[in-house]
Amino acid sequence: MITLCKAETVEEVDAILRDPELFERIAEDGQGDDYKTPFDGHQRYMMIMKEDQAIGVWNLYPVNTVTLNIHCNLLKNHRGYGVEASVLILEWFLTDCPKQYEKLNAEIPVIYPEVYYHTKKFGFQDEGINRQSIMKNGVLVDQWRLGATKPEVREFMAKVKEGQL
Image (cartoon, rainbow, N blue to C red; front, side, top):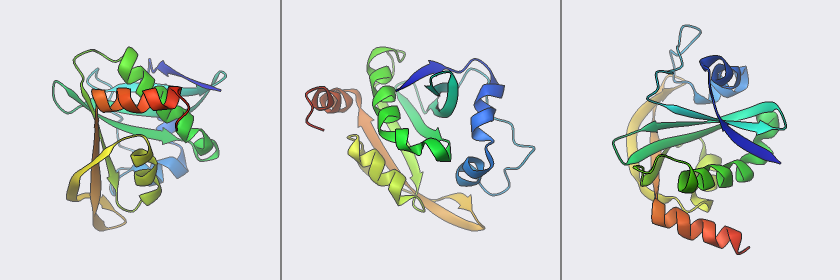
């Protein structure tokens, strides 16, 4: 079983995000040792905990006053908790997220189709392509943009609770 808790320090976030395998996947070209994880109160980081060990972090940051961008970062040896972590963050969105937020967005580089299909399983809808918007391995790469409104998340979570998914 895993749980979520709010990250209190940039160091605990960086302990996950700076994992060499994970950082390679999530960093854009040119983001190296001098990259500073934003931790100025604008973002929210929710730690994914297995017992008392951090195994991942959700990065959430406002796009505007009603929409949060969201991204899950799980350490390689713990990616089997992806479904459980996704359910937990959707529960958090419905119950503990600041009430002004009505929508979640996800942007996923097209080089990670497994992440795209995982996100689709949780009720996120295609909203388009953010063209050539991230630099990976010297190439500008498109990102899928997906979104889920609060009513869509409620509907999805009701199906989860009824055992339909």
